[in-house]
Image (cartoon, rainbow, N blue to C red):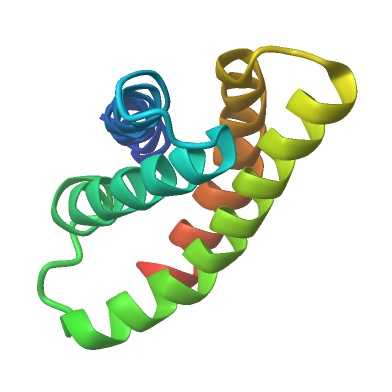
Amino acid sequence: MSTFIKAQASSIIATLFDFLTTIVCKEFFYFWYVIASLLGTIVGGVTNFALGRNWVFNRKEKKIPMQVLKYLIIWNGNLLLSTLGVFIVTHYLGLSYIISKIIVSVTVGVTYNYLLQKRFVFA
């Protein structure tokens, strides 16, 4: 299976955890949608790192502290882009936070995350 396809499958799995966390935090615990999205992004990020290291890029032989550090650098950019993107799309375009999160997640995942994980984090 190609790396790109595995990366997209990993992204979908991580996104499921992300969205589930976001929706539960917003709808059941009544968190502000920005905080709910932030928490979802954190859960999704942890899931994505584990899958990326162990399955997508198969880099288990490399030292985990350096991978975690690199991942955190890239992931902080993802966190900023995702959280800010959801706020902007929801607030200024008036879309549902769920639709906003889908738009932003797909855009950031395919453009930013995949390229930087492949070329920097798990290289």
